[in-house]
Amino acid sequence: MANPNAASSPSILRLLPSIDELIGTESGRKVVGAAGQRRAAALAREVTDAFRYELRKNSEGRTGPASALTKESILEALARRLEGAWRRSQDSRLRRVINATGVIVHTNLGRAPLSEAAIAAITNEAKSYCTLEYDRTSGKRGRRGAHAEGLLAELAGAEAALIVNNCAAAAFLVLTVFARGREVIVSRGELVEIGGDFRVPDVLAQSGAVLREVGTTNRTRIADYEKAVSENTVMILRVHPSNYRIVGFTETPPLEALASLARSSKLLLYEDAGSGALIDLTKFGLTDEPVISRSIADGADIVTFSGDKLLGGPQAGMIVGRRDSIELIRKHPLYRALRVDKLTYAALQATLDAYMREKAESEVPVLKMLGLSSEALAERSRKFVSDLSGRVPPDAGLGFEIIEGNSAVGGGAAPNVQPPASLIALSHSAFSASHIEEKLRSSEPPVIARIADDKVLIDLRTVAELEEAELLDAIAEIVDF
Ligand SMILES: *Cc1c(COP(=O)(O)O)cnc(C)c1O
Image 1: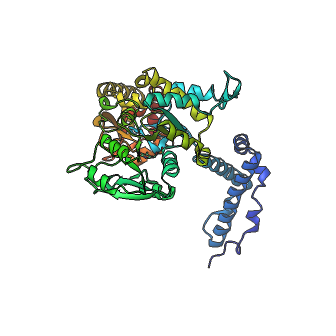
Image 2 (image 1 turned 90 degrees about the vertical axis):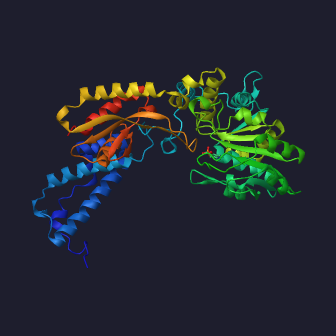
């Protein structure tokens, strides 16, 4: 059996540089500058160890031309490897990417990009000290998030609001506070899984609530809910199926009907609206996203939804509803564990301001992208392709054409809505689509695109106009070697 340690070749191993020599090379000094002395030394040790192992293996199997190695060539090879190791270690960093997938609320790419105002708020309002829990009128301690909550309550037409870490936290908190050890009635058609790790039955179980399923997968009637009410029932839960639709022979009672049953039976009506629209999104083709103010008007006692889906703000979980319910939640110890930080309040406050000023459609990126007409998108794509022809020589082998396709809403919302889009299809005479996709992914900043029919598709809907120059560079670089 091969034992790399047994047949070492001491003469060659003596040519290996010391760690200090390696990080003293030009490449080494670059890595030290970027990574710091300690990290650079650790990486230098890793690449040297790997190299030593290879040398031993080679001399044992007599495969490599080990004798041709000199002290200089080894140092040079290790310096290159050190830089490579540093670069690779940075691949996993959180960084900006260009989203050319056309998926607007792309969960893997951070869901909603923030508005200019929200970004400014993070750097200004939350930069240094701020009035997070300070009331400057009285000069005394103030309530955390009071202003953002006020905006949210008003936009939702609700008595009160509370903001937590995300919608999953909001749902867990609501169920824990009100339904621990009690029964919650849910339609079988709404026992859904959203985004892999949010499963309605599991969240209920974890909160200590007892699930009382009613109806069938496709049809649940108000009578099914009525029959399920017992003295142990505390709540009716309505879940927006978000990323899932049942079509055909379906039935579910309107929220008003659930509200009147809840009132007559002294139960709470809680709707988990998921993506949650603060304005009616019908004009963007999103016809079945619950409008939060409508749910409240229809009689929901509590509604929860995400901050970074269709609302277009930072990650957050919104809880709106009756003041007494919201105050009970605020006082629960679990709220303390799920509350948000000043950066979130700052970004959220600025995003909600845009809704308040009725400017959300022109200022909040998610809504701007949803509202981009297919004509405007086609015009951008044509202009981009013409710029691309100016950049890439005709004999470079790169093919690009505009094809008709679709963007997607994403983020577990409106799975049946696919805004028509003029896409730029890239291909190359010598490279496969996956090779092009990989080149784009490794450019700076990385460009994320999708592949269909052995072509790489670029959808400008999710690319900011300011990013187009970078995108052009990245595509031109595919043929630049
Ligand atoms: C997305 C979604 C959630 C989870 O929201 P997060 O903000 O990602 O925690 C919960 N419920 C519904 C109905 C959803 O659509």
